[in-house]
Length: 125
Image (cartoon, rainbow, N blue to C red; front, side, top):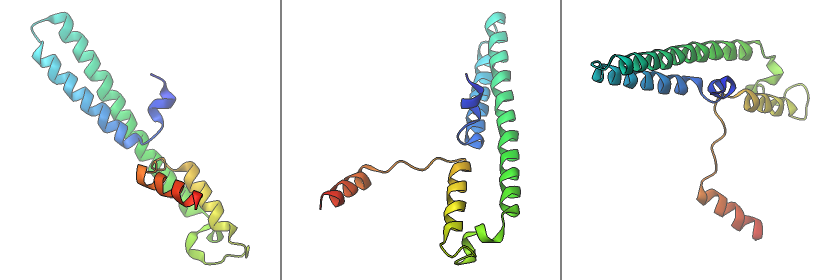
């Protein structure tokens, strides 16, 4: 598994997934405790998944702290609440929007079938 893929997306959700798999593997290890080789393998798997889940959880907390710190340091003219801003063209909110979109942890949701159909119909009329 590539580390980049592991840390992309929503690490908080991924951490819960890894912790869940680790717990299931631990339960499986308990179920096969009479077979020493398989028990050892399952324990190693459970430890690796639980460890990865804990690392991802810490990473997601660090990522949220950094995001909050970055938002606190943004100048007033970049905030969306500042009205027209000093640029006059409203490019500040566009810049902030692009930055938030770029550094957002959750990807934009895919348009539903209904939304795509409506766009297609509106484009033809």
